[in-house]
Length: 226
Image (cartoon, rainbow, N blue to C red; front, side, top):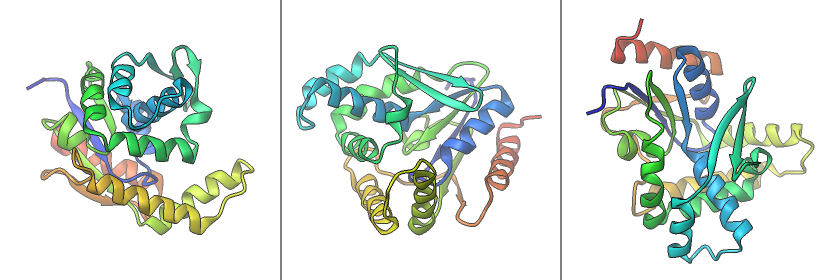
């Protein structure tokens, strides 16, 4: 077992994992892993390469050689794919849906597993995803399963996209979220579910600051942080 501590935050998309994880990592001075961004970056690479989503052999090779890097500009995460800033494409709904389909393929998950484990570096790691506590870091000392209702997550996403000036439909967004949840829960390998020793936290009616403080409190108790 590695002595480098890990906090995992798993859960469905839109529950606030990214915002909370980045804040926790910044507060502790730890590294941060956005596993969802890895799958989304792969989806972009697949699209740019013109590969068929069913060509798992070619996608697995692409995944193993994915030139991906994370950076921060203030509080804003920057994702670099082969040196290109693809941050603007990462959050697009189409990219998220394609990433979810790729993540359901066992060969793709296996190809990216070691890449994710390599993010575990001193002094510690905060890992955000769907299977961080169940598959990637099963020995993590602090595991959180962060969730919220599909309706609340749909409203959050609707407001984000409207603020960007995009024409979106709340009902359609909520249906897409529910479909993605079902796909993530029912995939054959590493389905979305809480680890047996994870703490369930529903963010539906909590502020981001409330969630951050609750996670920090759990981390202090479980990892004996000061």
